[in-house]
Image (cartoon, rainbow over all chains, first blue to last red; front, top):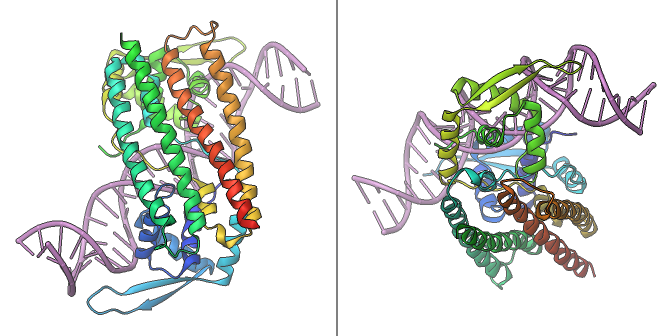
Length: 184
Length: 184
DNA sequence: TACTACATGTAAACGGTTACATGATTGC
DNA sequence: GCAATCATGTAACCGTTTACATGTAGTA
């Protein structure tokens, strides 16, 4: 039970939207799941083969001129059933995210306060950029241009990222003023 | 540059507070860094040996009666220097945290809305418990009983967890009402 | 009687990242 | 001439988790 290859289900989920090549899967994940799931080819291609071995997907080769041949993967009925089962299954363990900034900050006593301030400032700027990206995607998703059928769910997950990022920025500001006061 | 054993520095950081056995290190991390760093013995003991090999720590064996012998690890000057260097070094890449709830939610179109609602409700309850834990630790850290010298930094990192958890709970509530409306 | 605390470690398996290899077409 | 896009894959390496192994003392 404990060890589950969740990226396999991420691939299955993408295939449930429509057939994809491995290359396209990466793009789809980068466009829609980027703020909570990332994956490289080193995981995609071996897992795609595993899906075929399990009978959860089938491949069809398509020759192309001028471009490399395509391997198009389509989800099967068994694949769909397994996806649904997994989607319904409760989430057992929420692993703690490792946070390098907090790790460095926790031992901040060892270095001058200014160095911790620099770390937080940089972090804050990066999070502000992330927030701007989210807002742009949100604007697109809520516009008329977007005809996505799972638009609502895409928005839901995006708003998670937005809220969390906003609260991190708030925390950065609070922490920066705490440390600046401490310096005096 | 890209691949760095951060847990090694987490151990070094703990040793910078005071000498520890491997067993004690786990406890210290569980008490203070629990919300952003977790580690098992399978990582602690091999990394402790690595620290000694690098000359960043030294071991001293202490015999005990009734209890197993202790291996007490103490940070060296070289270890301290390397810790400081690492603490100052800017954070390069903030990896995206994989979120199983959001992954399941993103493909929520495949299952009845009620199942997604159940996932979020469960998640919300867990986060509420987490928040209560944080509040208890915060109360202790801000009390007079706590004589920790790096209290300020412990509080800083704790408040990160608090803020993020609060915003996640808010998101859960927002999302639950969105999905409930969608059901009608 | 059974569980928790104390205490140290190893081995296997797994998930994930990075680097490498190949190569044509399109657009700047 | 150079970068980007399209397209598929492998191999090595690394970090992490889990299971296993061992044993005493104190407490409920």
